[in-house]
Image (cartoon, rainbow, N blue to C red; front, side, top):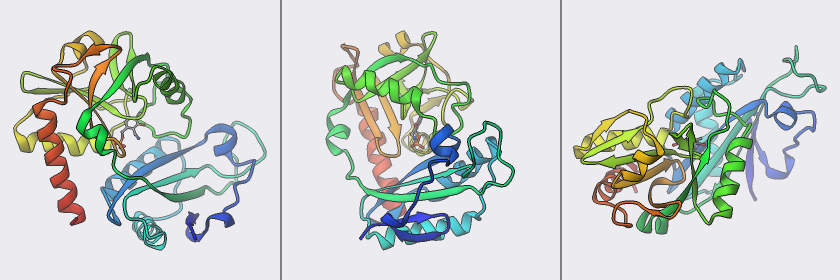
Length: 282
Ligand code: PMP
């Protein structure tokens, strides 16, 4: 039996009904989060929910449940599904109404969450992945974790067709982030990462990774860099909830550093593992 969260009730998956007039379906009018679960423990849940409420506020959607209530419900959902390692997918839309662009007067938000078994991609952590550069054609509010994912979908498809794991997005040659990750480069003991603004999603993993950098004595500079500068870095990594700290060893045929995950990357991964272990007591 698999269970989902539907508004504030945990129900069997098949009991969830999505209305075709749901604004999430018709307009992508909603927001979401992906939250990692390690050994049955939800990682950085509070941070993800804070971002969930922030995204909601930015699109003027009022989440009808308190953070405490959502924490309880999501933990129950993980338990009820007996999830060990995987993730929670959580979304909320503006609700159900006959199709019209402006907000409906009386619609109630619709919240759905489910879990997915998803082992950690250890081979990627160990060996690194390839990436390709793609123009960032998304809108100018990438700080909102919107359900509208056509930009990233098209970029990922290009990456997929090129045999790459991730698309590194750029605006006029300046790297913003990955299609579904944050992008960072390391050169001469300094980690460079795009500053948090409207052009990127403020990644939860990015923030955990920056704390790890501080702990291991790696200097952090929140400065944007160009594609050319990124290619000259000795180490490149992408971070996300599911990709954690994944080394990039090749960008469009260009070999990054030695072509193998670098020493700082290894140290960051080790510190990240220690952070997970401290939080989830694995
Ligand atoms: N940027 C984008 C565009 C993303 O989709 C994601 C993944 N949700 C991230 C960054 C990384 O965010 P997080 O570490 O919170 O998963």
